[in-house]
Length: 267
Image (cartoon, rainbow, N blue to C red):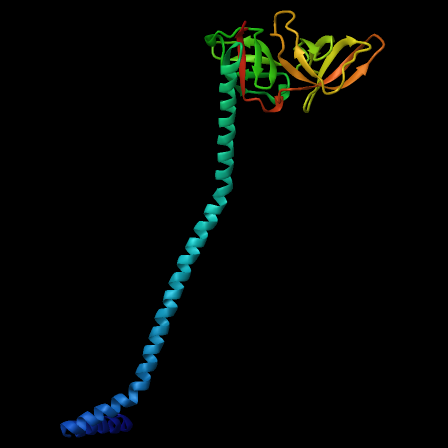
């Protein structure tokens, strides 16, 4: 053993023997002095422990807040989707409500149908509905909606049918202008790509028709019931022999969903 270590050991043993041989009072005094000497260190250690616990609690609380914040952000991200879904449900409910009102108040015997198919290349010409021969639907029957005339049945199958729209030039309807004796043939226009207009032909060359007047079916020919709304006069073009009018359709053909097939006309 090194001399320095040996001296330290002897001093420690001497101090221990000295302390053990003292009286109880002396021992208590020594203990008191010892505790008094280390008391500042104990207090400092207790304060450090308290600060450490507080720091750990704050860290734990911060992590909990981060989790809550992340959850709130996720919920906020879902909010637009929920709002969009609610708007869609509200729109569908409104459509169904209008459809039920139409079916109840209509003077015709009608069958409600939903549009199930629509081709981009024939968007303004035809649509397919989910009712057919099983629902007593046959060709050339008129098709209506809340706003007016949609078109007529073109082809049928057991469980579906094709509707030729009023915006197709092949769908021609005998029409009259409110407040005038004017009668003409209304049809769609070839090559229409966006919000198509209707063309009312064979009006008199000095026609009194003015923009803003309503156009209705005449009932002539037996294909379409009389007095079904077709649209509103937008402009008039007078010619040397006859006149034509541009008509804005009453039906929003860009957003059709539910239609009604007229089985029999009411009295």
